[in-house]
Image 1 (cartoon, rainbow, N blue to C red):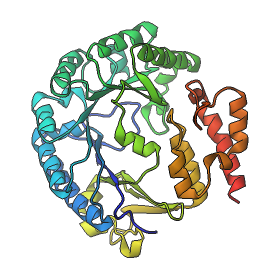
Image 2 (cartoon, helix red, strand yellow):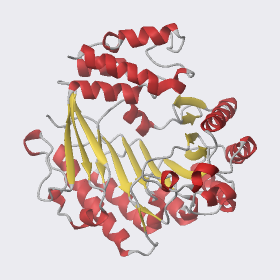
Image 3 (tube, rainbow, N blue to C red):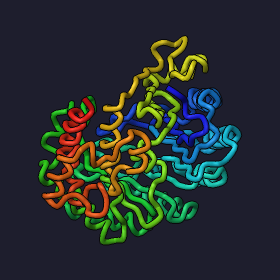
Image 4 (cartoon, helix red, strand yellow):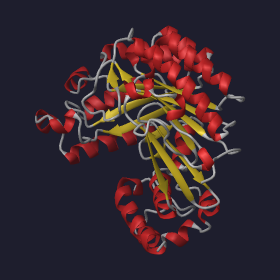
Length: 407
């Protein structure tokens, strides 16, 4: 497969460190103290990896950079300064959007000031809930009482250029608690809000510990809470532009939109992945770095990802990078999976360029059935707001039809 040389390619960097583990989280992270020496070593490994990977792929245009985790703010001001400065020296042109995730307890003034100084355009703050009993039940790090102070600080440095996460369906949460969470958050006018329904993921304490069966609200009540949150955000002027994401006009996440459009991205750090698509063939390659901090720190740079003869391949550290090929059918499915999450649907021009067919020709039966139910937008191939509530069912129909039409 040809590499993306000459094509823009977003960059995701994973910071796999947290002060503690929340019971609902299934992202790869390990608990560390702020003074852990691995934090310094990790920044050095990331910068070496970034230099090698960007050069290997011939990337000179990175439209968006996203530093997520884990808890990137756990790096502190000095390390985030080193990381952002180092990345800046590798990129000939600064990204139009640079997002850094932060948790309130570590998003202090020095961290925020450094982010702003180094060109961060958008901060993503993990609020989740102000309600202390709910926070304690799921072992959420930090205290709800700290949130107003940190939100004021974020607002001071970023204005409305920040996003906040909220979770619905938490233990101890009811309509009143959720509405109070929204009232408190919206008083700081975030430009963007991610509203997530609590999902018990396999392997997390949320599914492993019996106590949660009695603590979590029934499924119907959890759904009702999310809908209350959605309606409240929309009434406050936030547009739902993706299943779980709401933004004031012009404050949408460019980086995430590129994911939903299935555009190229590279990932750095353990558990991160990258996806490179060849628009000439409608095929792609994905690599995933092993979720192992120690292996990542100890691997030679050349042992992570290489583009030998235009094909991604793991080198030296054979167990460090998993590489998979994406054929046309798989890539079409993923394009639907990601694209229909957005209120705009898959990009029709990109679909034709990539697969040589109009998306309507690939899933005509599914579109007809859902159009008859009034759940397809009349102006484009995308689900209506109400249709997003049944996304899984819609995608099942798309996948079945794609497997048939691509035989």
